[in-house]
Length: 183
Length: 123
Image (tube, rainbow over all chains, first blue to last red; front, side):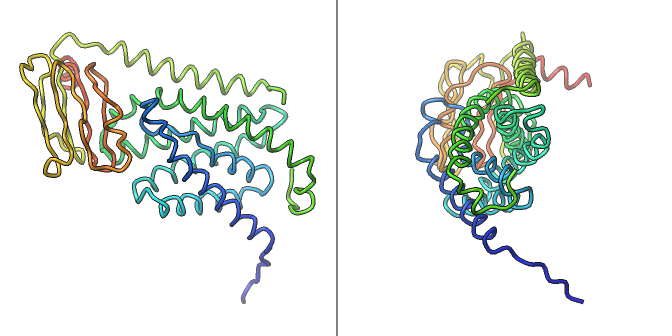
């Protein structure tokens, strides 16, 4: 017997759109020579995490994971290659998973700031684990505190942007009109 | 948006992890010689004693496209053929525990104190 699952076309379009937005954001970040100013290897603004946060709150877990995977694949095609893919995919999935878990306590225990902060630092943990595997040396873990300090700044930045974004989206009514699974 | 108690716990946890890891890194000071280990693919290829460097030493990979130089007790990636140049931007490193890594080429330069080595032997 063939079970037919209805595909929500609108949702499919939104997922594709969001993956493209996220991939573009992380691609654009490459043009900011942040490494030359603050020489912390692997330091990023993590603007694509804004899309992940949006997806977790408005689109649901399944769509979020799809967006994250597609975004990372697109990112590696746009420039980066296999090693960059391993970094971004592990980091982004770590970040998405912790934020999905913490979202269940949203408003009761955590605000967007805490959730975004946890996501950003988990991204760093993922990065360092991949780096340790690639180099086959655990010495790279000494980078974690430095990277995490950058992650705190990046996490706060994405939180501030997300709060503004959410406010605008909720006021505009676009979310209510187009997305059913809002929270 | 109001902060919740969970936010403070997240922030404190992260801060504590950072502080503990920083402190444990600083505490691991070695009295012995400062040695730079250069490895690729997890395989130790060169060991340079940074303390008794009298002249500039060069280590080349990829026919000179990747150049690591050591002088005056410090070591750095001077040139690399990788796209991100993270290794070059890391700059000079000289204290035990510091590392410079070129992930695309899987080259790691790490500095150890000689007493680190002794610890490993004792284990």
